[in-house]
Amino acid sequence: MARDAERRIVDIVEAERARLRNFIRRRVPHAEDVEDVLQDVFSELVEANRRLMPIDHVSGWLFRVARNRIVDLLRKREPERLGEAVIESSTGDPVRIEDLLQAETHDPEAEYARGRLVEELQRALSELPVEQRAVFVAHEIEGKSFKQLAAATGVNMNTLLARKRYAVLHLRQRLQQAFDEFRSYRKG
Image (cartoon, rainbow, N blue to C red; front, side, top):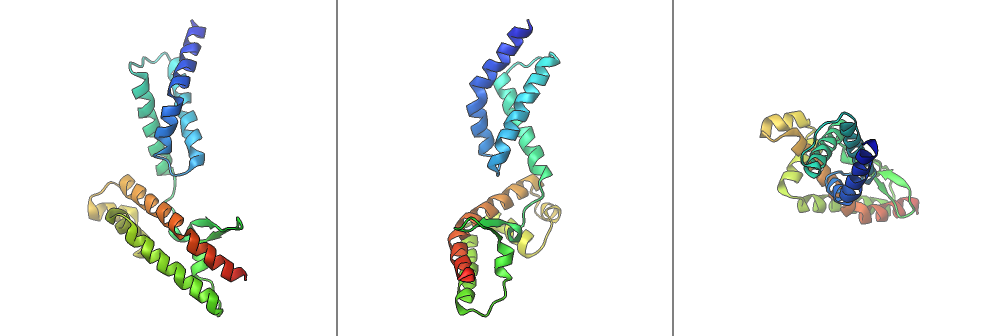
């Protein structure tokens, strides 16, 4: 009987792994967390089986557990401020955006590159959906907490966190070229 239960779990894992991984990947901002969440879900399945917990619709149950684990993961993480975001230069060096914007130099080329970075930031901000831009500006520029934003807008804190996260991801990607240009001027 124990072997039958083990075989059933192995079959479920094999059948659902790819779909579940894709589901998690679309909702988890960091790729390294995808496998952790996936393993947590399957561990919970093994534990449920050990406790002889009846599961009517295994597939639906797995996705519900995955959603819960994703929410837990997002709640644990502190929201990332853009200035603390790290962008990788073309040489592979990690550099914080805040360090770039606060760099003091009298080199005209570096000043130009810093100005270009600020312009690109403004352009990238204008590309964001209204909801993401509003959360980003309120949190990053106006210094409002997510609790304050939730109270003022009536929007769930998790939704606000997700909007901010998507905004930061977009800005990172969009600013990479300007960052590389600025970095090369600083080194040169």
